Image (spheres, rainbow, N blue to C red):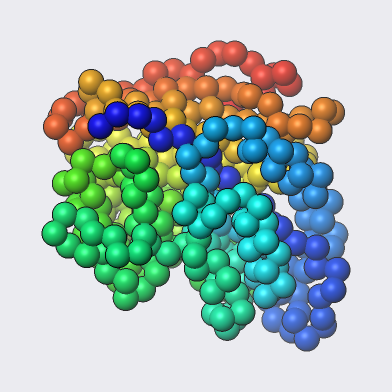
Length: 333
């Protein structure tokens, strides 16, 4: 296989205005989310940053864009419509993949008024055949999308949670299917990228924001393997590693792509990954892009190279340390 798969990873945009919200829409947990927006988040997630983000993405030669959740703030139908319009400005559902976050599933809502609007961006490839098996379509997740020599596997950890909680879970049925899909795509020699909102590692977020079945997911991934995991939810750039039989699995998180950030490390940003075959399996070049409050634009940040073994190499994952070039603000990814 030849060529490079170049994908941008964005998360936690919290696209919303909430200016026309009705009182009847707030007679549940959404009241807390509305107050959060009213007194804090409407100043944090800025429209001018979203405009700069669109401009920056348009200047990159990307093969695909992935979103790991929280496109909305309190999961109102109007927010889903706004997010659908924003997704359409980025590209077709063939070129953009979405998995939901906890804010998108803030409370139980009719599917037709909410997630149905995003289904073309979440669903598996139509009629996708992997090996001799058809990818099952009984439920939407895990989704499976093959692009170049990579496969994007979307899992949903999003469901309504109690007030003051932002937990998530996959559930046994979804994890059973995930294990089967990971095995099938491994045998096809594809670079498997798992997309999920909540990070699998418990230490990445607080107890009330955790993935409640994270231990079961980590055990499943250790058994079946995956080449890379992309997540959101923590609102910061991070790379940690999960042990598995061949070495370790890189788990990569991104900041909110729309936040002003009270601290530099919380400021808006996203990542670009270049996945290419190599003599030892795979090579992933990651590039961070961050937002400059002073210049009102995104700029190139740190880069790193992650080496991943192919199915025939049997070697361990190794990481090349990130280049030590500071960004224009002295930030590090």
